[in-house]
Image 1: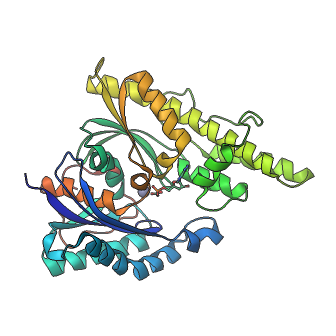
Image 2 (image 1 turned 120 degrees about the horizontal axis):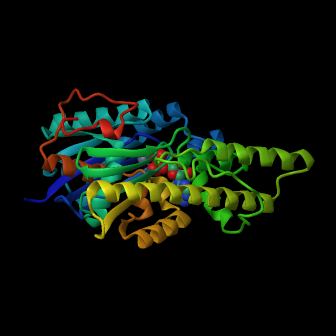
Image 3 (image 1 turned 90 degrees about the horizontal axis):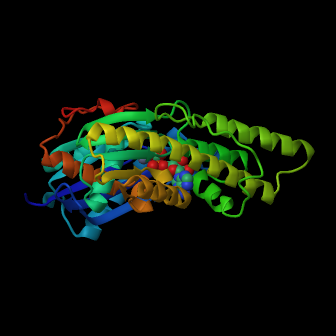
Length: 356
Ligand code: KG4
Ligand code: ZN
């Protein structure tokens, strides 16, 4: 099969991103150019993403970002095979900006439109990076999502477990806010945790040891809130308190993730009949750029005979390259969408099916 070249556009949260990727499934693919303008500064005063501000910023940035990737790759729109874009799930205003832009480009160039599920793009990023074969066990951990699933093929995902309240990235962001840290909170907590004593405060491990592979993080954040309140009753939250709380929080997250991943690994082994053979494990989503989480996953995979694919941090957080690559995977299977493909605020990955 000849290599496909796809333009990918991502606007579902607070990153305006585009990329040009060339390749053939199962990958790896070649990232010809990629650009990203994050809006973290615009949202920082609010401690989280403000949908209205995000949508407006996407409108202002999207044209420049797309022009920049075409210039850098020295490609014209006539030289691409398709336009791929996130059609959901995500903040609906931002999704609409990207989708309308992609439709206009597809219409003007008469190229196919690939309206993608954002979570599928995260899932397939390991194939862009390393050509990871199906099936693989996927841990998707981001600001909006926290799931364990088996990926059997393009459009075919089996959910093993998901969060019953907050996503793990959301827990990092909310905890950071309690500690007076900047948004996004993940990198801030990770940095403070390196200097803290994880054992100083006793924090809960929600759902650890329970059957199934679901997650829960809101109780952990609430426990941090009570400790902060207690400390502030008698004085101010000091630097050491913040470091110790960050370390304690992250240790609890690591413990819970390891426990849930262990359960999912056993189920994956039994369902895919790979007893004794090396199985594939993939981590994706912004939280997978956390160094301590990466080390924990490396240890778990080594102990359980899983081969680990961990895309580099720039492919773990939201980006245009994973969208372009997922477009290549779908285009190779003839899965394109008509120009009236709808934007979707909610769109569970396991509902995709081949015809989605
Ligand atoms: O995948 P992503 O860029 O956006 C979506 O949510 O789709 O993930 C962003 C999330 C934020 O919650 C951020 O705090 C978290 O990923 N994050 C981290 C780290 N870097 C980003 N969490 C923990 N440690 C990090 N180093
Ligand atoms: Zn994402």
